[in-house]
Image (tube, rainbow, N blue to C red; front, side, top):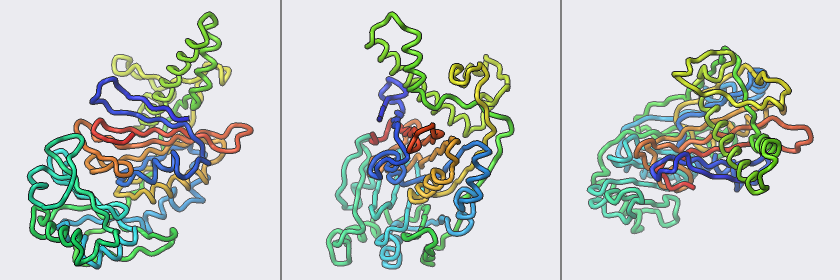
Length: 398
């Protein structure tokens, strides 16, 4: 079941799309499409109970950080856009689907370039667009910005063909010729053990590892009810005997909506290691009135469920293939009785968010997602998941 709603009724507000799905969902549906279509990832946070971490980490080279020390790396360089169209890079990386490129600039006020899945995307100011001689489209978010998109893997993208020659001319003789800072992530297109070819020397790039950090959250945290639908239906049926069936359904839907938002807020506070979700930590109500919702009837006691948890943080410039491997390992090695939450943060100034959806910043630039893996229940043949996509107001993703 898929449910979507906005955090605010204002048009300028961010949006949250929620999907209730399973671990065996088709590869062409959520949650898998959320992961593989989200190209530019700057950080991944994974939170799970300490007991689950101790077992999963011993088995997974990704979750214990060895993979990042071995061959998951990225580069920083300052170079003209035309450097990426030289045969050494074009044929080895772009044509073979093993590179991700993003220029570092503010997308609302500057020109931003990116390459993903062989697609070149230029998000340009009007004064730049009018001088490069390439065909593009007006941004849906601003009449003073334009974007140009070209498939660099097209059979016609070769020297002597019109499209290739026009792009090379623009890269060498227009405002695109100026060096700008770039992030470049190169990765193997084969299995996990494939060796990544070195970056051409003319980039003069500096290599960085994907940073891996691990932290214990010292105090136990309160774990909420991760199935708000069941709680909502039970609450509607038991508390409102005199109202109509339709009103009960509407009430249950509202409780589900609030419950899902509560889970998203809880995972965000987990990532911040906030004291508000730690057991028996007293916070002045003048500072915060937030409290973790827990189902008293489910436990048969007023005491909430608590667990000690750990947080894994992976930070750098990650491709969607990397985040998919992280998710697959988490799903594979997480004990059946445990839960986990994986949050992936996108680059707020990337020209696209998911797939080819246009993205801009405005007041937030959000293009993030969180996947919550629920514990297996007795009789379940698959894991139940909650997937949250947080989308900024200037983003065409839906």
